[in-house]
Each structure stands twice: as C-alpha cells, then as structure tokens.
Image (cartoon, rainbow, N blue to C red; front, side, top):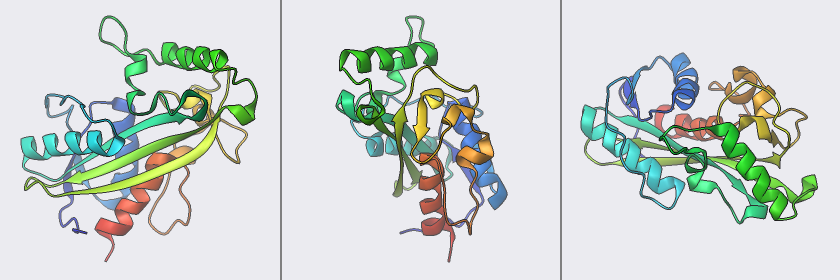
Length: 214
C-alpha cells in the first residue's frame, strides 16, 4: 500500500452532495482539496461494470488532468429483490430526457420495481449502500477502499437531508432513514472513532487507516 504524502488532492467528482461529504470527512485532516467540478474537468465516461472500475476511471482522469493525487467515489444502492439493481447504475436511474437527474423519480422507479417483484415486507426489501473510494496518483498507481452498510428500502421517502436515495434507505439498527439524519449522524467520522455509519464513511475509515496513518 502506498502512503499519501501530500495534503493537496483533487476530489474526483462533479456530484455536489458527494463532494460535500468527502470534504466533510477530509477537512478535519488538514487537506486542501478542489473538486473536478471546481477545476472544470470533463467528466469521464463511466464504462465500468463494477464500483471499483468506475471509481478508478474517475480518479485516474482527475489525477492525470491535475498532476495531483485524486480521490474518487463510486457508490450505489444494491437491492436484493431487484437482483442487485440499480447497483452501478444507481445514478442512471435518475437521468431524465434533458440530461439532468431527478432522484424523486428514481426513488419512485425503485418502489415500482419492488412492487412488481412482490417485495412488500421489510424482510423482502433488504439492500445495502456500497461506496468504493479510489486514490490515484499521476503515475497511474491506485489504491481501492470499499465500504458497505446494510439496511432496508422504505416507502414513502422520509427526510430531506442528504441526497440521492437517502430518504428511502433505513440502515440496519436504526429507526430513521439517511434522509432524516444530520450530516454528522450519517457520515461524521474522525480518526480514533471505532465506528462509521455510512458506506462512504466506512470506506474513508479504511482509506485513512491504510494511506494516512503510520
């Protein structure tokens, strides 16, 4: 594993919610970070069929464009009753005809698919959020970190916090959805903490322990 020896990196994302969560996580560690969106980098085509492949594509694109290490995230909602969908295509399910993303529509699409699959009980609506972080260097070296959190898809959506599918995902052991949680509750984590809740925070914990700590 290669250690990260700089405090200047690029957050390889154009997703405002994802960028904010990553900044919340890396900020306390003293990083100076600009996003691919801030730098007007072109979004690469995510042609991979796994979270790992797509995370690598995004991180390498920003590392090559900036000459700096870049940290990307590829994440999605994996629903058992739907055979793992939407999975790596989680964002695609929210795409509209005009190229924007409508996650209210995407959540309804998920609910319609679950109803069609006959998944009415909580036991039949198990799911997990997956996050894969990729840290890439300009020389092409990459490191991958995967975090997952188990839960249940609920309906109707609850809460206006977070982003994406957060209002329909209730993590295991909690009575609230990600959409009802504050940022601190959902993804707040710092070195020394034993536990991290969200998939992204869990992946980030592994990243810190692997690439930052001596």
